[in-house]
Image 1 (cartoon, rainbow, N blue to C red):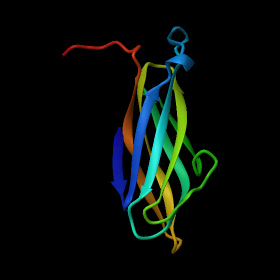
Image 2 (tube, rainbow, N blue to C red):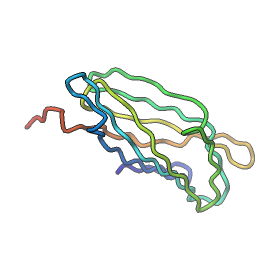
Image 3 (cartoon, one colour):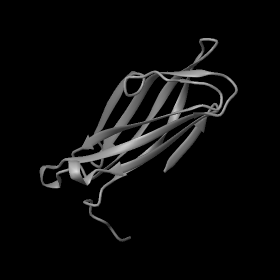
Length: 130
């Protein structure tokens, strides 16, 4: 589990390797990740946009950005939360994801919330002993 709080918004991410959707022989590795967005502050906010960086173990980075998450732009009242699950494929057995959610408060002010960097690890990656 990976968690980070920015301006009273806590983002928690739990990645899971999906062996049944992966094919290591074809260099296809798939993960699901569950994200929980919690409003720990005193004002209502709305998630407007997302920006993800997905980097494989070769250092190749893909960027994904757009409005909302999973087709929604959730409104989070004080003490409220929103949870969703999404996924990503890679052509290597490990990688990293990180990103930013752009939020808007009731005054129309936009601010960024950091999504914690999290590791995508599969059981198919070679382990190294140091």
